[in-house]
Length: 77
Image (tube, rainbow, N blue to C red):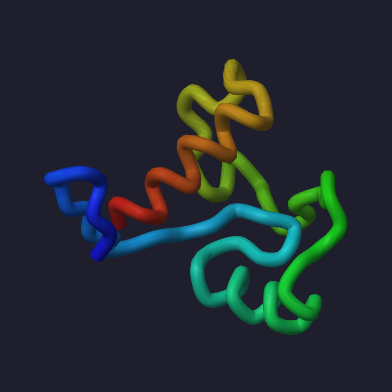
């Protein structure tokens, strides 16, 4: 738990969509395998917007927006 002034913040879940891995477990493994980091601007090769979000509506999304929506979906799932 982290205190910000008189407010408390508790992180209850997290996820990642990164070149180091897609999802919490894959990201953690990739992060540790890379020695605690990875190259900047690394491509997320395993990311397929249609596969993660479904066909409907993904045609109009740019890649970054699709990544943000997919990551939020993983956290909420």
